[in-house]
Image (tube, rainbow, N blue to C red; front, side, top):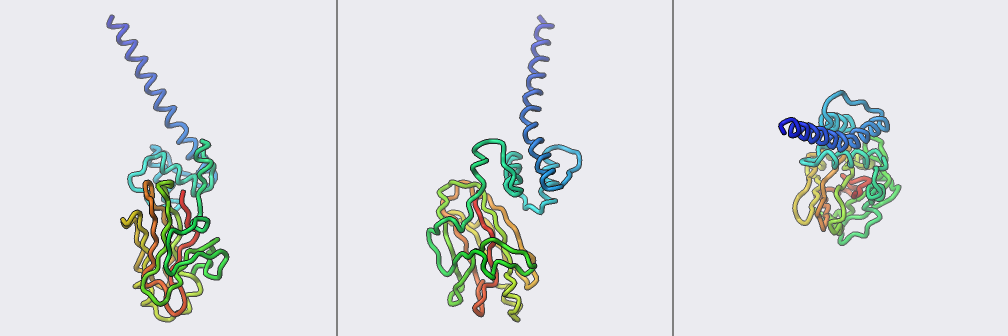
Length: 232
């Protein structure tokens, strides 16, 4: 009886180990594929450690309490890698340019505009641009209706704005992003030579997404813009 019980326990342990290795294998394979695509090689260690190292090398901001699966999804989206399931293949991201704003005040979107070039000579396919010089705040709002998980984009200073002489202008400028009225992220404390700042925010369960620009337009020039924003 004892031998039979021991055999059953051993079989159970083997099955559990097999299940664990099977569930970890897809993520490991996906990480190897992402490393090959990005030309990045992580050191040996646990999957969590390798993911963290990969994110650091890509300059990706931490994603809070996200699971390994969610972090791997984001890496694949960032690199443009098709995921393994049909559902993730269909979720390649939707640019805010292709979405009809629910409301907006002093903000517009442009494609291939002069403002698409940032102060570091990088270019963006389209921009969300504050255009209101009469009021301190400008905003644009989108109805996500809880249909997306992440918002990605880049906050930057347009190259055109570098001709402005008053460097104190950027100290007051800020971009704030809200989900259903709750502040998700705020970017401020700019300098004239501030580099572009990429962001990736968790918008799971968010119905209304609002982007506010404060003190972001002076002397007929936008001081800070958001480039290539999209939801996934």
